[in-house]
Image (cartoon, rainbow, N blue to C red; front, top):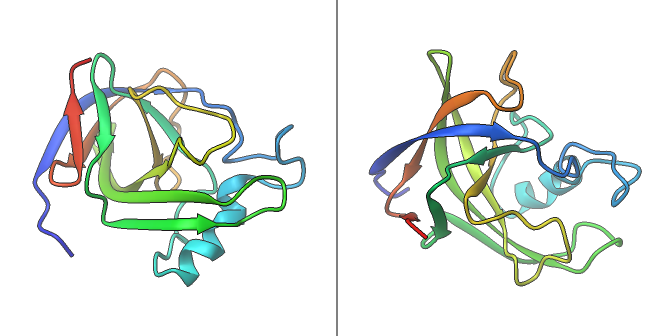
Length: 153
């Protein structure tokens, strides 16, 4: 495991496409995270203790680039409803109302993703269930600066 050099940014929780937590129009019988977790576990990343959905965290006015993630899994064919995708993960921390939660930046590679794109100012995070968090809540996100670059557009 690499040494972490954390950079902490103020952020805001925003609504996503509701595909990760599902079910949705895209995946009518499940959420994508619930379906993907067993594939990631087989590849060496156990996410069983994470909520079956993502936190969509806006770091505006900044943008992020996944530069050197801890994990990258290529050509993961997790459903018959879409093409195989590439996924990258980097450890992160979410601080909300004085509590800190260990999580993972979850980054499906946009070049392989069919739809549900996020702007570069939105970081998708897998974390344990965070009680009482709602859209537009303010929080802090800590990212490993050796794996994720923060840029001003």
